[in-house]
Amino acid sequence: MKLTAFETEIDSKILDRGLDYFKRDKILDVKKNDDRHYTFTVEGTKPYTVTVTFAEDLNTITHALCDCPYDKGPFCKHQAAAFYHLSVSLGLKGMGINDTNLRLSLSRLYKNELIELLVEMAMKYPSEQEYFLMKHAKYRLYPDLRYLKMTFVKKIEFYLNGRDDLTSYTLMDVTDDLAQVVDIAREIDELVLFFNTQLFFYTEVLMIKEYTQDQFGSIDALLTYILFEMQQRLDQHSFITSAKKSNIVVTLEMTLDHKLYDTHMQKSVQLIDAFKDYLEEDLPRKKYIALINKKIDICNQMGDGTNYKELEQLKQYVEQWYGG
Image (tube, rainbow, N blue to C red; front, top):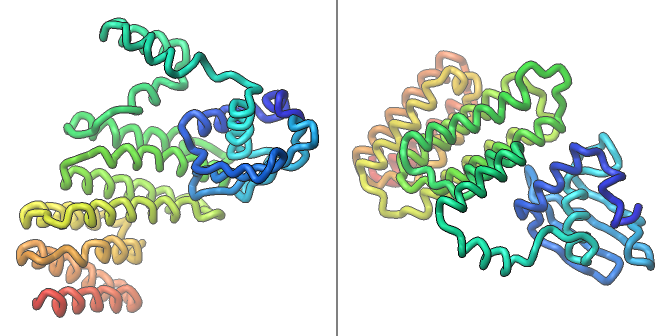
């Protein structure tokens, strides 16, 4: 396959997603081993490795491999993103006018002219409208948070509602898109609202797990990612007030009151465990212990000895570490 003609050789849907990955800087790393061999790290549900080998003419691709599980065609979206990168970096395909000149031209426009330009672009490229709206948004106020949650749910509905051909590859696509919304939620400054939003995301993703078969582990990977985002925020704010911690624990309790978490008790334990090292103050610690006791009672009722034991160990850890 000629690099100069790769767009004619790849399925249009795969090509569109590859271009989207390229435009949104999903290529995390590029290694040029020599003029004929390249290795890419492309961000997906997890980082995937793409290798590309050229013939001596430096245009004919002789080998292109990706370690993602996609097997519905000769090329995946991660490979397509790598091809776009190569075609631009090797000067085979232009992606617009010089960046510096573009910035200079745009800087001369008034605000209302920039708005009109963006509206015109959004109307011309409807598939990019959501990207225009969310690229630099700061979700700090309740209406914006509501829009963020609505976007999350709509992405799930777009991929999953009424589909008879649901596959693990579709789940990879939806979890990739949902991870982008999770990333945007990092911009939420207010801590209680941040955890409220991330716990909402976690619950919605757990619901997907209820009625799908996640052969490649995409859903569990996204759940782990959301949990990691919450732990990162806790680590970054070592001086959270007692009142805020109490409100966060209450938010956690309200989330875990959902019946879904009784059937996925291990997920409840993992969420509770994430907060165990941030309970120096008496009030949030008491609320936290009360939450553990509530889940212990449910484990007793369900005869769930494994999670009962883990919750008891968590309770002992908190009581011993903080002195009750």
